[in-house]
Image (cartoon, rainbow, N blue to C red; front, side):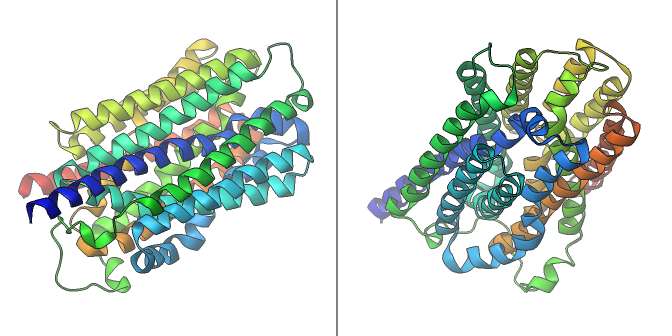
Length: 408
């Protein structure tokens, strides 16, 4: 019996680190289309609204596929579903490279849709898997850590772009060979990651469900009667939409002559630093939530983010850019923390709950397009006022469940 338990624990630990690797490298793959937004805008002569169609294409799959993938994950297993995510993502990365290479914007949009589909698979399967691979009390810690690795990967991706792109190359057209070589390499790496989990002797039944599991209302309809799930979904919709707006428009914000007025090289470095701060926020959040209630940490972060966005709206130059970076630090833990609060206690319904919560990613498809339209009408800087309303909602969510935790 002890030998069996040791083998199970080893298999769980091995899979946990493979999942961490998947979050890291797929995080890198997912960031590149946003990394090259100024170049894509230049290559295809896009306004801000049309540029944000990239975000729409990448995130609309969360609405179309989340619940379906949640049901599929229960049948195929979380590990197998996660493997599928990486193989699909490799196709998306290669597709973006091909679209840039052939100057075909519809192909890039289609590839972003494929990437978004892969990310849907990853979150629906990966998040509940992380919840199962260890103590329920440390669930938010593992989720914050995994998502922090994704942020670090985005930072590493930005550094690769900075190192690979020669400073002497100015035009977007001249950058194409360098951009495509990065994307094709990432696609190959994702294929390797997609195959790895198949070599691990682990299945979903090996890890007992550690959450408090309700003994009734286990059908899909009952999930929509869970107030915490529904409010979590709504909050994630707006949180992820605001976050996607920052990701997609950061370099444009930094390079805009009327706002940051930075050079291309400086904006890439600033964007890299943004992800350093973003990752640091997630690691710190993972560490502090061992000692502080997640709801309390979420409340503090939301209030700080709201103050930061005010500075983003009313400052200019490097002060505005730094303010946006600081906002990234405080919003970094929003998604994993809200997700872990909402999914707590779902037990074997975790995959279905995850599918519903992951639908919140549709906000990252809709809100950036609306922000892009607002930016075209009122100016890029003032478009970030949308985030201020979002952070007020996060404050409300944290207060709702902080109160319930106190009562409990």
